[in-house]
Image (cartoon, rainbow, N blue to C red):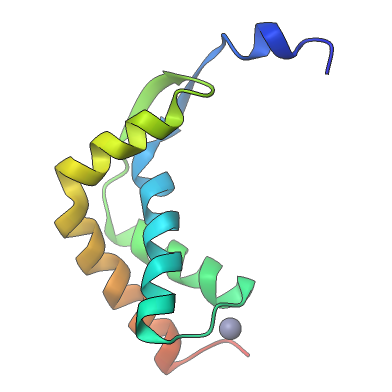
Length: 96
Ligand SMILES: [Zn+2]
């Protein structure tokens, strides 16, 4: 924890689509009444992310939230479509 102040200033590549997909999968599972366990959640995230182009940005740790908000505006329709398809696929054949 001693190095936290420095770490917070470090830049790192982050796939902002991944951050948005995770939020979107949680919401879509709730909306569609799907199983919200960690297996189904992770499978739906993986399916959706494989169908989407990654979108990496260089960002400071802690600045992520505003980047995700930008993605929400820019790509939300395409991501929502892929997430819905992924969640429905997992609901049809869950791995448990
Ligand atoms: Zn499940």
